Amino acid sequence: MATRTIWKGAISFGLVHIPVGLHTASTESGVDFDWLDKRSMDPVGYKRINKRTGKEIDKDNIVKGVEYEDGQYVVISPEEIADAYPRTTQTIEIQQFVDAADVSFVYLERPYYVAPINKGQKVYALLRDTLAKSGKIGIAKVVIQTKQHLAALIPLGDALVLNLMRWGDDVKSTDELDLPKAGAKATTPSASELKMARMLVDDMSGAWDPEQYKDEFKSAVMGLVAKKVKAGKTETVVEPQEESPAYADNVIDLTELLQRSLKGKSGGKSAQDAPAKSGRKAASKSAKTAARKTSTNTAANMATKTATKTATKTATKSATKTTSKAATKSAAKSAPRTRKAA
Image 1 (cartoon, rainbow, N blue to C red):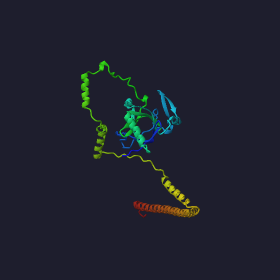
Image 2 (spheres, one colour; image 1 turned 90 degrees about the vertical axis):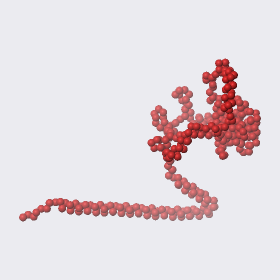
Image 3 (cartoon, rainbow, N blue to C red; image 1 turned 180 degrees about the horizontal axis):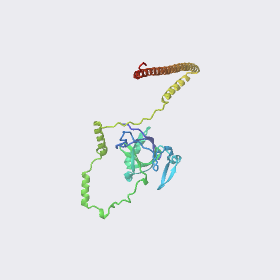
Image 4 (cartoon, helix red, strand yellow; image 1 turned 60 degrees about the vertical axis):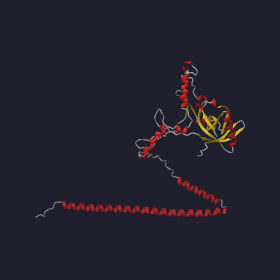
């Protein structure tokens, strides 16, 4: 499967210039755990919090500072940071060639495959084969995404690998560790011990096969996930959607109108007049139609309001009259009858 080129530039040493592209040579394959609110299964995000007040703050109120003493900072502005960025040359500038065995693996950090582009196959192969036969690697400097890196250019089969390196002061010394000194009498093993240790090493030796080594934690977690999915023990997480701007549809219509306008202009002066007239007629017609629709809608609304008001009044009067009659009859029935005077 072809990989995406993440950087294009050239390898440069002496007067040699090799156009190349970088491709990622590694990937992160750990388990990605997302934070969820257990009460609602909503995704949980991160906020910018003022550590002293505990309140959230806006990104516009954030500046970048470098701590030079405990609790003491120097604030660096975005402009000052931009000025400090290294000059981007799009070049892997080889500083020198060194014996591969002299560079400890603790300096190696992240590998990238280097592939030739723009007919640079022959000179690419020349550099690769020269390094492989001489046992040398190239130590280079390269700027990727505004950050300068130290790197080792290493032959690997048909490919050249650019392995980003840690700077010299990023690797700690072993001087402070309590290590047994090589050749010290107190820790030197006997001949029989060395022989048995060598036999054990030989017994456990084999060809390097990266496929036989797996991330056991990842396998266990993903196996658990598969079981839960099969058993239907899943939760639906709905990511909140951002509302689309209300004018989005209008933008599309405006683009179409602009395209039509440009097509009209390409037809010459006479072609411009005709569309203008027809446009004015169409606009006038649309305006009249819209006015009639507005008028009709207004009239309909007024009629509806009037009818509703009339119906309400009628219903109220009728209800009042009916209630009054019922009350009169009820009062007449319940009132005691008086005898005529003798």
